Length: 411
Ligand code: AMP
Image (cartoon, rainbow, N blue to C red):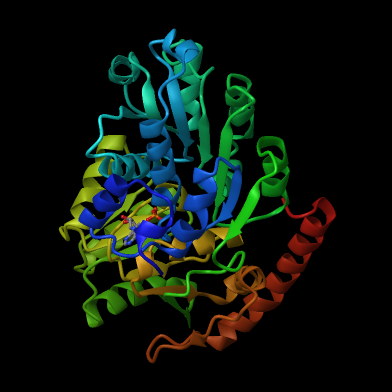
């Protein structure tokens, strides 16, 4: 790490980040800021929690401060200069919060737009356009078609967590948005993981991009210690409450695969005396925000989340992530454990794995290209007689699944 004064930022922005307590630039900031300032397109592989928001946010702010709006752009009072697209509203809010902090001492107009809430207040706020707009694709399209905003003079476009955007099926929305944008612009793609779909998208979007990779591809943050506990599926709930209680963990994010599973687990944990709440896509925006706020201040000890709901959560100093179930998409494992060990802090990611989930672990380990240590916890050892029968069945299922995947190519 090195300080922010060597990356080409205006002194006022260096002072601003220093005031926020950022003493040293993170590797992605060191690598990306000079390239973005030079005007080049970039494709960046950065884990969540590496400081990527400042990596793209600061150069965009600097551009807006240094470059007056063109006369053509001025003819549209609702012009948007820079657009940051995020897959989820939580991530949009987090990016918005950060960018506002970075631009705090400036008069730049920073706006946000996401779905699930009334359109009217967002329309009112966007009447004068925005220097920087952070938006989720669906809501942006609503605003675009209603001609609330003018994107014809956009200069900067960022795709944040591009891999998740594709996973969530936003490709058609993205194409619709691109049609409204000028072809001459600076485009930046950030993604925690790379695969063929991402490369294909990058070919359509980016012009001679510089590839910036600070971590080896598809690797989990080095600051997160990972461990797997082998346990029978029907004893997981008991084990999770035991771990939290016995180790006196005060703030734990727990991942499950389904919304219903999240609700059930939170309810059961409350019965075990652990104050837990669920967060997922069926909860209203207001409920999600208040639950998250309670978790952040320690009123809720365990937050049980689905992958989509947890995307973009930035909880400073979160130390523990528990995978109650391994994810079906191996890349989600990286996103999940990236909620901890942020900005250089240490974190711990525990996965509770039953015999039926062995094949999921195999896929994760292939993606990580490393093995995760496995342990049995005294008192929670898996029942091997039970495991062997299911194991044979699941090996067959896993083999069939892999054959199918090979057939259609991964994704
Ligand atoms: P991000 O990857 O952008 O979500 O950032 C993760 C967290 O790191 C956020 O809470 C940021 O406020 C924080 N952060 C970003 N850059 C730095 C830095 N250079 N030094 C310390 N913290 C940082």
